[in-house]
Image (cartoon, rainbow, N blue to C red; front, side, top):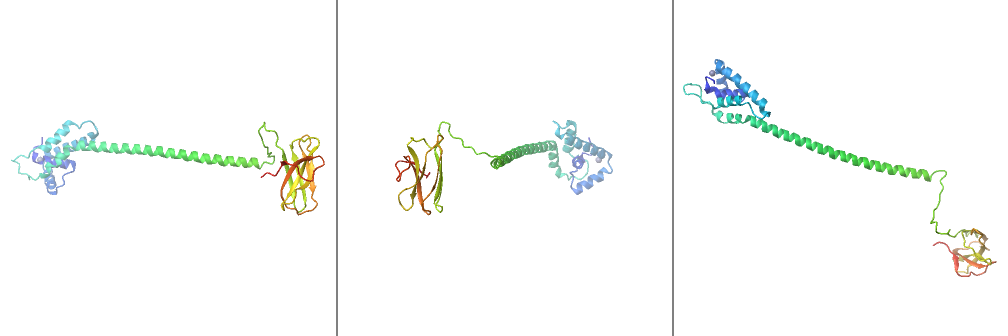
Length: 270
Ligand SMILES: [Zn+2]
């Protein structure tokens, strides 16, 4: 224990670097210049402060150092010593100082908590970013896939050996089809039939032009389908420039008729 307990508080504060009253500081420094006991006490206190700071993260501060600091702070200045009695600050600062290790541990706990929350937030953000990147990669891959397919379809359509084939229901018999071309200017027409139904030996298919002016149907030739149902008419009208509103094909007696016999067997697709 120090022989000059009236300096205990000032020494403790001085050891912590917390003695900031200029008068107290000057008085203590003047005393330290002449008193070896107080200098040794100051060295011990400084060592204690360092120990307390080091052990703040541990489960307990070293009891001996803590006790020595606390008793130094709590020591009453003796009456016989005539040193200045001006350490009014002592009531606040030593109390604060005795809680310092707890405050340091609290600070560390708060710091650790903030750090942990920071790490957790960073991990969450990383996970979000990774999910977004994966989504974008999937979208790009999808678009690339669609473009690539469109390009391949284009390649096929433009291939020099592209072979268009129409597939129909295998249970449907081949549909009769009559294709024809009429030129009003030339006054001529061409008809080509395929899969036309067979007719009795004494019947033929006859083609009629229905004039736009409402005149009577004009006979335009006839054909008799062969075994495959194929047939052809090439016909030149008596005069050119006749506007047709339609055409019709009927079944007529061999040799043809001058007026159509109902029903109409074929008519233009509407
Ligand atoms: Zn002294």
